[in-house]
Image 1 (cartoon, rainbow, N blue to C red):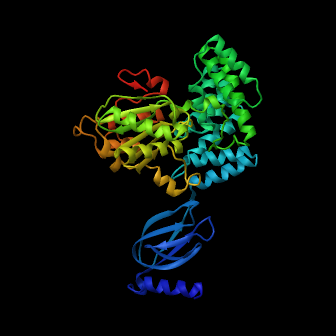
Image 2: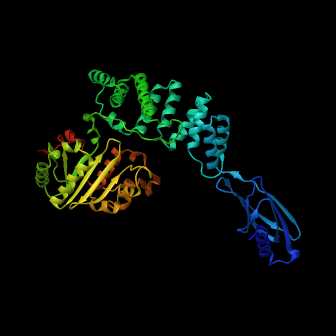
Image 3: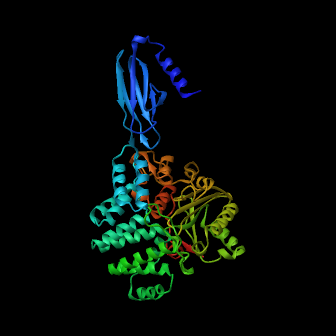
Length: 483
């Protein structure tokens, strides 16, 4: 049907209840060409538009697409009058942001700043990346104070942006704030390569001999891990300038080697090769197996039987006395083997003892994990940071999401809230697994954002006898028996 005939029929439909002397004329114009006009929720055409409407109250809506905020107005039309509406459609924050970034990429900084500033004041949801680009533009213009303000605002929402932390470090270094700059570069490095947090954690004390050894190792080309450790030791020693420059150098080299775009707010993550003697460093704060069994002797006997048949799991181990019906088992192979190999052992142990086995660990990239085996069957697993869609498949995300209903069956600890019942509830587990606790009215409480603190809270709910460190630390625990 041709548009004019369609419009004529719709006008007739609108006008049908009223006689000719009860009609009014409506003119609608808009600077945006061919904007859609709806009268009383009925689409009647595109601008510019002239149409007869019945006298009375009407709701007028003019829209274009997702790039514009719709214009809405209620009118009262008297018989025989003419009403003219000049609709103004304002751009959405998202569309202004998109054009602002395109202008920035093209090197049109003045245009980009105008668009992004407009986006920061526009209606609708405003992308928090606006502050990042405004910070880069201010930095390019030499307005360092404003640039730092914008970058801090951006990092308050997205602290895990490696490029954001890096540019904040550059700004603070330019301002002579060396300690703050060193911290920003270190945060950028950890965001870019999460394994850096584990590397830093294994650096040891800042003694003269330790620093001298790290300096020797750091001279090897491409030896990023030892450079990271050296930077941290220098920071502990108080050599802030050297630590700052070394953190920045390692970060920039990693970015160059992996072609990381530092003008983008969303960072990619890269791998840092580590020496063989560093591969077990992630075992803090937890790398232990917990077994629901009647006695430590049963667990020890079952583990010895398994390790005799599987040489990769042979090595010294310790068991704890039963607490809350849990016996902790920590073995040196746990600090040396990958999760697949260790989980194979957990499955065998759970099957042999016909009981629950819980495996807790923190991996080099700073993620907390648990695996729950029940009579040889994996019934629940969890990862504190599984990744985003596209990085990890949907089924994997679902599998690693954790199930509080299953987890609740093994909880014998103390609840998080003193206001609730005296036992652990699903709400308590949601607080840890899904980072949400209604009573606190917040998501991802600051105290639980790291893998180590998350694991400690989880251990409290389950009622474990204490989350140990690696094997060496566990062997010194009072009441634990080494074999």
